Image (cartoon, rainbow over all chains, first blue to last red; front, side, top):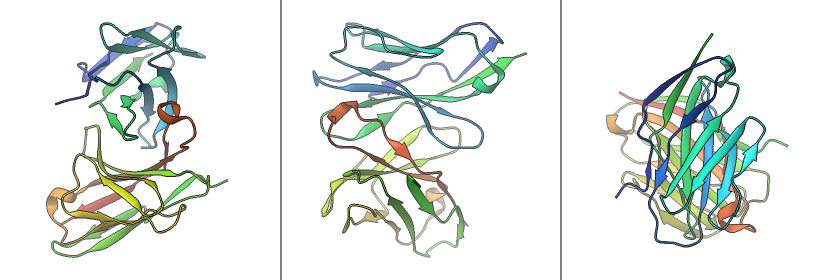
Length: 113
Length: 115
């Protein structure tokens, strides 16, 4: 069964606007971590933000924030004030106590000038 | 600090050939991983290791083998290469001390084509 679902294959956003990238997950483990990675066209994987299952507050890192709704099993990434350099693939991932990390299929974000 | 180093960066194999993708990390991480990324897709876990001498299968282990004789190195072996193994391969590592909180640190990938 798919553990991480990203339903938006592609998204467009106007420069300086905010955008939300969706991610839902499936686990029965009470302890887990949720991660977002950025993959620019150059191909490297860049870690953006982390949210723990027991964290009471939504994670934030600069222009990135995570809208964590535990009961709905969603962990959406919000990018504020989009920049042209934000154009990339974005992957949601989950880590459970068996130590592996599984990724969603990704969302390609294009920022329009 | 080099982080995670993968070699080679690119490789073309003929069907039936074998090769080893090298991965080394200098961060003293116990956990190491191999993923493949097919064009336009997400990352699929091939194998992972939680320490020297310990390896486990991921989602797509068929056609691959791994070994972990040292903390630093985690080579991936392809036996009898097939066109379906054409992909970009990523090695990653993570710190074990903070459990599920630890992000993965990725190498820059190896682009493999099997023809």
